[in-house]
Image (tube, rainbow, N blue to C red):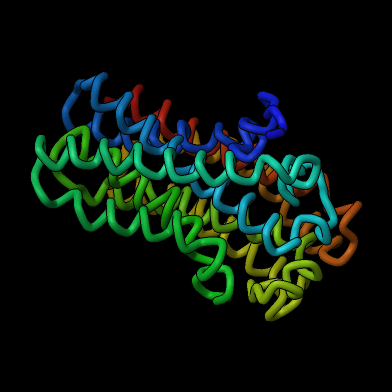
Length: 301
């Protein structure tokens, strides 16, 4: 007799607590569009948000499914911010549901993309295809190349989501949206990078080759600090060269927290229990910085 699935079996692989990031990145793209047009098409904004959240659910569910199949999650040292949800380890019978969730969530942005293809034309296609490739290939292919693993999260959350949202809102691309996208590009790369520190030994066993595995935690901590600096430098230079309004400097409010996170990562790169506060600070930086920038853009618009 088939075991009945609980709500947690369905929702767990989606990793709901981590789905706050897509709205922040989408808000940044809506903000750059608002500065350009002076208005918001709420239907387009809602569809962009649904597409972003769905794609994030999809990559999460694919990750949970394939990590359960490989046995990786059973070997991973879990922290409050990394190591999977544990849902499929608690109930292996939920694996099929997780894979179904992944594919249904994968199809939703495809359908939304087709709608915007009819509205705005074919210029949305390259970003859409790139996003789908990242979602499907991330766990089983991208994580086996340290450089792609380093930059792909930021490409998806930053470049593709921010610029894609700006495009669906306006029907065009802009340098301002590109410059704004650099901020989540560096921050989200850092989000995944720091979360790989506790996972490195387990990840090696399934053939992953990310930065901490390739070069060690101490070198990776220096890259983490450099990416933080580049994120905030993107805001400053964007304003200095007038690609972003001065109100975008609200994003700098999180800079003191970034200094703490970078200090903690460099001091405790090889001491996971002491690194955990930096993991939490890293998440706050990723959520608040694009949100504060978006608020600044709406004020300026």
